[in-house]
Image 1 (tube, rainbow, N blue to C red):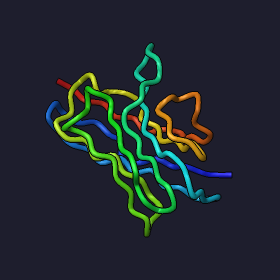
Image 2 (cartoon, one colour; image 1 turned 90 degrees about the vertical axis):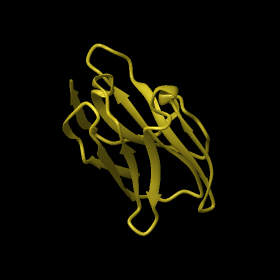
Image 3 (cartoon, rainbow, N blue to C red; image 1 turned 45 degrees about the vertical axis):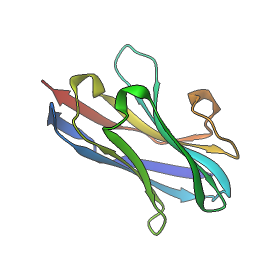
Length: 126
């Protein structure tokens, strides 16, 4: 079993920055995708960013188009934590952000992820 705990959300004004954290514990995997997703009220869950890891090496990173150049996904191996650094935030970034793990596969499809955190709220005001 894997436990994921997000933190770092909050309320900021347009143009502000936040760094989300996702602390992972439990089982470890040699091949997995770590992903960030978001869901705004009344909308479907949306892919934000993901990293594909094989045997400790990151082999692929992908972002949804609307966050390219503003968000960066990264990982601190010593802390077993994945981050989502968000710059130049916009009101349309307002959502509940969740991290997730897909075991043994590369995917950006939410329904293919095996483990999810509870989410952290990001609110961007204009």
